[in-house]
Amino acid sequence: MSRKFSGSTLSLSALLALLSANVAHATSGYFASGYGINNEAVAGVGAALPQDALTIAINPAGLTQVGHQLNIGVDVFVPDRSASIAGNAFGQDASYDGNGVKTFYIPNIGYSHPLNDDVTLGIAAYGNGGMNTNYKSNPYARFGATGTAGVNLEQLFVSPAVGWKINEHNSIGIAANIVYQRFNAKGISVFGGFSQDPSHISNNGNDDSYGVGARIGWIGKVNDYLSLGASYQTKTRMSKFDQYAGLFADSGRFDVPENYTLGLAVKPFNNLTIGFDWQRILYSDVAAVGNTFGVLLQGKPLGAKAGPGFGWQDVDVYKLGAVWQATPKLTVRGGFSLNQQPIPKNETFLNILAPATIEKHLTLGASWAINQKDDLSASYIHAFDQKVNGANSIPVGFPPSGFGGGNANIELQENSYGVAWNHKF
Image 1 (cartoon, helix red, strand yellow):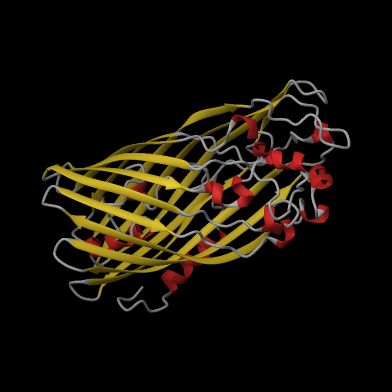
Image 2 (cartoon, rainbow, N blue to C red):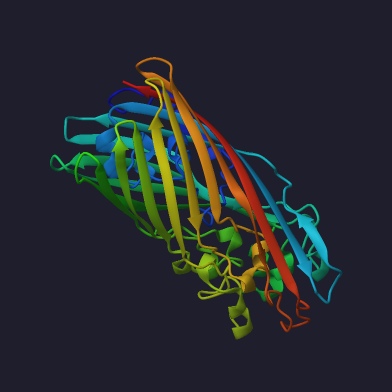
C-alpha cells in the first residue's frame, strides 16, 4: 500500500481474504473481544490506549498517536460449543456437540498515514464478530427436524477513518463502518410451523447483507501519566437476509447493535502502561437478537415485525490490560475481561444455535522488534468455559403439539492464537 492509499495488490488481497474468511467470534455476546493482535493481548483495552492502526475499530481518535504504519495479522480461533436437553417429554436426556467445524482463521489489516502533525488518515478491515454451530446430531430432531443443524454468521467491517489532533492535549476521530454480513442456517425447518414465512427459515444456503454506520471517538491527555478516552458506534441498519425472512424478526433484518466505550490509561512508570475500559453493547435494541422467544406465545410468529428473537440482554464489558516495555526489543502484554451474561436462563432453547455464553477472558501477548521498522506480535486468548442451564426454557404448550417442556442447557469455551507483522514507515 503506498503512502497515498493507492489501490495496491497488498490491500486488495487482504480485503478479499477477509471477505472469504470464516469469521466466527462469539465472545462478548457475538462481538470480538479485541481488534488486532496487540489489542487482543490486552483484553481489548483501547479507548485511551491505541497501539496500532487497528485503533480505528475501537477509538479512531487514536490514529493521531500511532504514526505511519501497516499492521497485518491473523487469528486461529478454536471454540468448543455444546448443548444438552433434559426433562423433555419428546425424548430422553441427551448431549450434543456443536463442533462440526472446529477451527476458524480470522485476518485483520490496518493502515495509518499522517498527512501533517495534526491530521492522520487510516483504514482498517476486520471481523467484528459472529457465531457458528454445526451439530452433526441435531438437537431438534426429537421435534421433527432432519439433517445436521447449525448457523453461521460472519460480520466484516471495512472502516476508513480520520483522526484530528485539535490541540496539544485532545484528539478526535471518526470512522465510517462499511459492513458486510453473511448468514446460513440449516436443520431447523421444524420451526417453519411457527413462522410467517416457512420457506425462508432454514436450508437456504448463504445470504448476504450490507449496511453503513459510524464510530466517533475522543482521547484526552490529562498529564504525562494519565489519558482518558471515549468512543461511540452507531447502530448499523443492515439490508435484510431475504433467504431467512421467516427466521429473523422484521422479515430478516439483523442490524449491528449500538455500543459505546469509556476508558483510561495510566503510566505509573516509563516502561509500563495500564489501561481500563468499560463497554456497553445494546443487543436488546436489535429485534432479531433482543426480542424474547416467548412472544411466540403471544401469537407473534417468527419473522414478524416484533417477532421472536434470541432474547439477548444488553451487556457491560469490563477490560483491564497492561503493556510492559521489558527491553528495547521486547514488549509484553496481558489482560483480563469480564462481561455480563447475554443469554437469560429462560432463553436457552433457540440459543442452542448460538451459545454465546462466555463471560471471562484471560489474554497474553508480546512483540519482538526485528529492526527499527518491523516487529512481530503474538497473542493468546483463553475464554473460560461457561455454561447456562435453562430454567423452564423449552415451551410446553405451543400448538399444534407443543415442544414438551424441560430445559436446554448451553455451553462454550474458546482459545485463540494470533500473529501479526507490523511495519513502521
